[in-house]
Image (cartoon, rainbow, N blue to C red; front, side, top):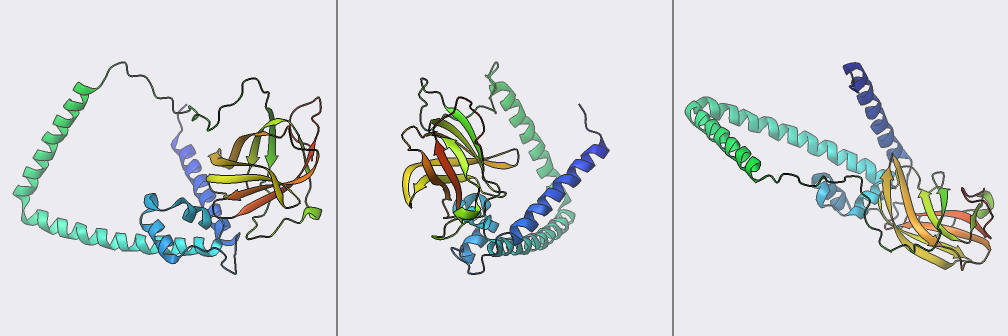
Length: 272
């Protein structure tokens, strides 16, 4: 189905509105007045200059610290202004040179055209026919093989309403709704709060401040949501009240109160 010009303009407008909302949210949602765990300015400047060579912990920190995110935006604007000035200066120099050397310009253009024709012919002659198509939707192999004899019960935990916790603080259990989880082999899907970064997270099931189960996992963006999907065998976990802690590599934590109970005859979503 073709998209007409009017529809494409509307799609671009909605995309710009979404980006503007994300920037506004990240600039105000995590004030961090004490600047706990803040990244050095040199690291933020390095990210703005060379985003592909920066460490992932820097981008993860920007997603949970509004002062550092605002500083990152200031550096981007500064570097963009410098590049525009340099680009204008270079094009002015090129324009002057081409007017002064028209013969050399024509010769260089002809050489480039001949090189492009030769490269295209070489690629066509070396291309392998019947090459197998690449499956772009193929999922990577799991880090741990799943036992085919074990039935993993799918359980979804929505953590999108949780607030990030820094340092050694804990969530106010008395104000948080506890989620019921069966003590069975589970296929957990955790939905993290908005703007949570992708990457490594550590999952810990805590009882009286001590971990009774732990496992590393990777978070990925899927349809605008940051999800963690991992196998969790709670068969040996005793029934009772626990806290599920999700900690990022930068030390940001999310804590959800859970209640481990014996599995019922019905499977599905956890009950609140």
